[in-house]
Length: 222
Image (cartoon, rainbow, N blue to C red; front, side):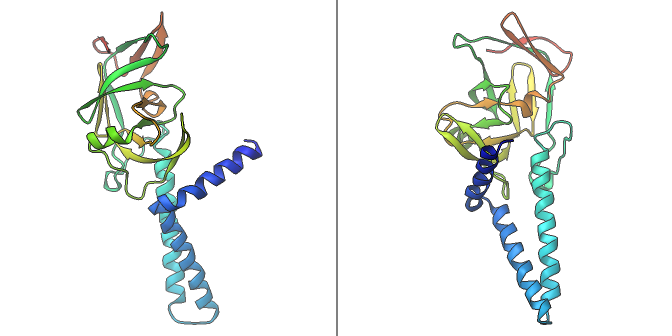
């Protein structure tokens, strides 16, 4: 990573602080730790307790951040339903998606039972939905979730992370998959690699995208 990319990443994190309950909690815990240390130096009662509680809170916040980021990696498959992070499963049978006239792969999927058009994007790290679709599908940002910076046609924006109960298209049935609610997408919704990489495999043959969750019946998705 070059210096420009590093500075941009740091700037994005700083800009995200006001929109993240988790990051605000981390700042509060750090502030509490400083106060606790100051009280300890002056041998004032309560300093040690405040310092210990702040350290434990920071540790818990760090673990939560790591868990949320690790869910984008299908090899880890971490699930904590109690914290709003359900098990992520992609099952079903082979599904074939024809190349659209615009040179992209589009599929009509159902998100929590709500039909919408999705672009299959192997260059996207995470599945992204518009705020309008999120509202119709009853999906809200995960409380305490960390903002994720994604690139849209309108530039880089902070997207809120959430989980979808179901994403269904063709013979593919995804459950508990993390999505981001991304302002600036317009009416475009994207199926990204956090779903695709949980397939048994996918390939392109003669312009047709073939997705294989498991060895079952074949279906054409349109």
